[in-house]
Length: 280
Length: 303
Image 1 (cartoon, rainbow over the protein chains, first blue to last red):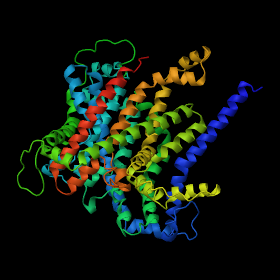
Image 2 (cartoon, helix red, strand yellow; image 1 turned 30 degrees about the horizontal axis):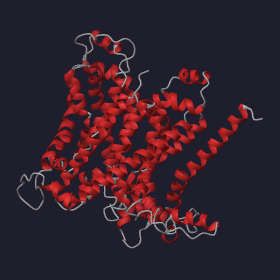
Image 3 (cartoon, rainbow over the protein chains, first blue to last red; image 1 turned 180 degrees about the vertical axis):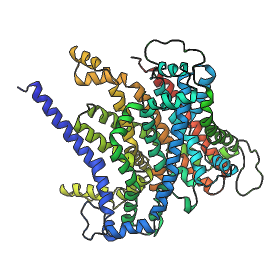
Image 4 (cartoon, rainbow over the protein chains, first blue to last red; image 1 turned 90 degrees about the vertical axis):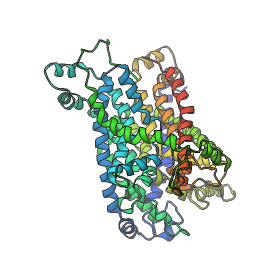
């Protein structure tokens, strides 16, 4: 006779065994393969197995990535692109979302759906490039930042508006009655209440823009402007006959590292924000 | 979407925030999103290219030529198969994971983090790694050969990335691996929003674990389904990176999804073809995703 308690323990053991195998096969092994093979010289990395390197080539591989791969320039470009984009998206979308969450007039609603249509319909590429050129900011970071604000704000407005609707309006109305102007009310009363959803939105935008590859091909074609993610294909196309997988993987590790560091530091905030924010 | 909690009352006049606050972001969205999308719709019907000085209206010629070369049908086919496969893989796996990791215990937090890690790696990096793992003598085939070797079988030599039939599904799995973590989080958020007394009541009424999932949790998860099904489907329709890094659209055109064609014609300076293919992508989303969202929204239950 098996008691309910015993059955529950057995079920739990089974569940976590399955989950462990799954985590190992789907995440553990791929990540291990990337990291360990980035430590090997080319002859060993070609075989692409789980074994530790026989000859360690960490210094050589990563030096090549840093020097030939121009890592620091890519890092600088990625930061110069991502930080202003994310800040602008979050601040400007937040201000608009405040109005959309409060103003129920039909005309405002129409504007809302027009501005969030970017959640569904992807950006136009060729005509955007022409627009940026006409504005005199083609191929520059300023142009790319403007592009991300113009195209990614839709999702930010959508997320923040949903959140604004869940917070009571009495506090800000009290501030207004006490004589605070709209701007002061937004900065001092509304914005602090929006911090959780702002953090979530900023995280999602950070991940998307940092890792973006398709649009930067068009937006930042110059070698001087190249982001880390754009540079990732460099070691694949050198020597067409034999791809230097050790260098490709070292580059993958070096490019992903900043996001892993951010994630480790802000993990709690990110996970609770992601789980709390998206469905509001 | 929920409205303000509690009783609805008429807002005090003059206290709604001024619409001027919408202006800054609206300028960006108008200039760099709406306007280019409108002009793209017009450009798709012209012979705009780098080879000619003037731009002429050519009616449907771009679409007809894309159809005649076979690119149109192959792109529609590849994109839809890819998007449906991604949608199914991503939602099945991540819903399963979310249900298994629902309770916020310390162990579950560790597992959630592990399954979220691929989200941090860029899709292009994922694609490069996948190309190495799935090569004829890559890691997957050697690992499988080791297993078959134990049973005296032949070495495995599956060409994961060169099949005209199943490579598109392999790529869908790779894409789903990279983005799944986000959708697991959305399902976890949906599960966290289900009041505990509802599941407790069902349990007291004698419902088993599976019945609670089927009759209490799934119906209340519909808002999460709406977000996830829509985002996975649209995300896959406008995908690019994984396929660019692995097959570049091949073999033949078997995996050439919309944006691969868009880039190819842009690269050769044929902007008319490039914009026409973008318009086909937009149309595909309008035709498939909009009815899907309408259907899902109708099934959402208000608590």
